[in-house]
Amino acid sequence: MMKGLKKWRLFSLLAVMTVFLSACGEEYISTLTPAGAVGKEQFNLLLFSITIMALVVIVVSVLYIYAFLKFRRSKQGEDYMPKQVEGSHVLETIWTVIPIVLLLILAVPTLISTYKFGDVAAMEQVDENGNKTELIVDVTAKLYWWEFSYPDLGIVTSQELVVPTGQKVYFNLKAADVKHSFWIPSIGGKMDTNVDNINKFYLVFDEESEGLKDGVFYGKCAELCGPSHALMDFKVKTLAPEAFDAWVAAMQATEGQTASKDSTDLGEATFAANCLMCHAVTSVTGVPGGAAMGPNLTTFGDRSHIAGFLEHNKENLVSWIENPEEYKPGNLMSGNYKVGNDGLSDEEISALADYIMSLSVEK
Image (tube, rainbow, N blue to C red; front, side, top):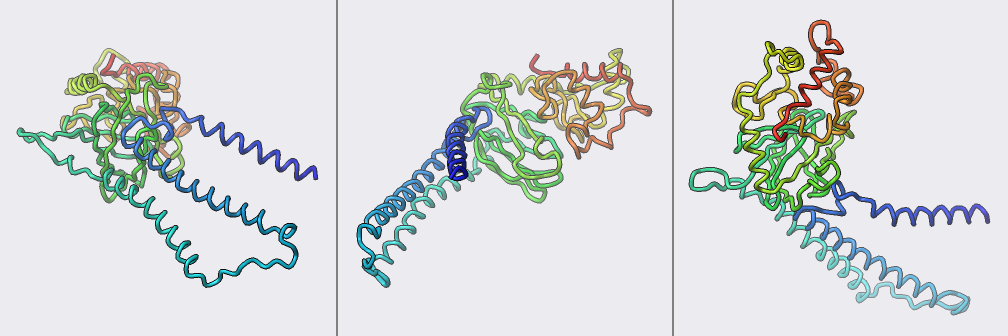
């Protein structure tokens, strides 16, 4: 008796926790609080599907309870035999047609939305000068970080995607190593990035991210890709169109920016001697130093996190430089990254961290 009571108490507790925890989604990462037109339409489709399924459950439950109460033995007697309906063409037609109708009700809006979200024909549209009319971002997923290139603007960045609000942003998705999956929960559904083909879709960002936690929306890799899959995060900063244009101009102004081994600044000289072969400090593509093996660091000082998940401060950056494997096992910087012939001194690492933290286009 006591065991049964404890089980019911546990079940009740779990049911109550489910109700309350379902409301714990944060706006910067929850699919239940969409902040974009695509996410909102997908959310409405989800609610529609849940409503249909809930109606099915309610109808079946009512019929079950009705039959249970009406035909119980204590009421009908031991010898009562319900009417046999085996072979009834009417009933067989009813319980065949109803599921088909329900599937059609679910399928029609789902298919319409699927084709709508997959319509990327506008990516090819150009104006009278031959320039693309829509904003296009090439996303490249790598172990375990993200590169974002704006081909028509001639700029590239990493780990933090910056986009304007109120317009469609089209994405070319690909992977450099293994399969990943690009997902911004608050904005829209996920899509895989593959090594052998490019997937395309669009998202719309309705709200500016400034008032959110860390001032960004959170993005995730939604495909198991290795030991640090759970840490393959990126962030999305959404700006008003005018602010986005200003950001683009600031990024384009970094053309020719680089680090010099002859600099009197110890951090810059250390970076040039040990890091510049893998990490660019200019966001302009198509120029020497504009593309690199590792994440572009031009906007490192503007980011909200280090390595996608660590708090953005010098202490964490120093720890990352000293031992990236401790934080992201399997990342390509681990094991292959060697600073200098005999390693760096504490003074050099500290100066290097100061220099990297100073890289900014917004400050």
